[in-house]
Image 1 (cartoon, rainbow, N blue to C red):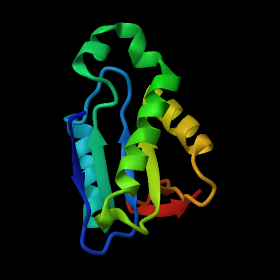
Image 2 (cartoon, rainbow, N blue to C red):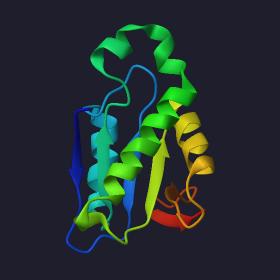
Image 3 (tube, rainbow, N blue to C red):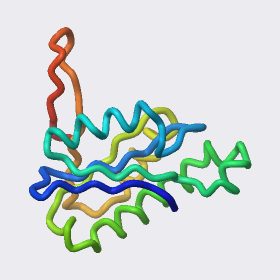
Image 4 (cartoon, rainbow, N blue to C red):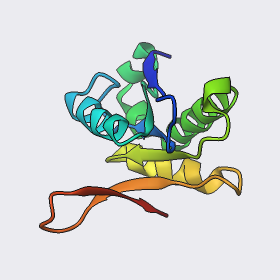
Length: 131
């Protein structure tokens, strides 16, 4: 799988992106969100949930079980990296990516904590909240 992992020296947590159908780790929107999170001290992992061959089959874009399996596998890989050790890992998703992220989070080991970026109505200030 292709992707991009950035972990600051002192990361608050690592956010694994779960993009929606028809998107990729190169999405300008996801890259912009990742940059904002990185400036706030979060690590980010953007990667394609499907191989190019899998993505060519349109129905795979809506295969939530397959997509959540990929998120769980990526999380396991991430947890094996020395630079990620001890960092809470959370998911960030939109569209079908959000469904896959919720399913993966529900299946995740009990001690993982998710941090979800949110914006207060009218504030313009992004904050990190716990779920």
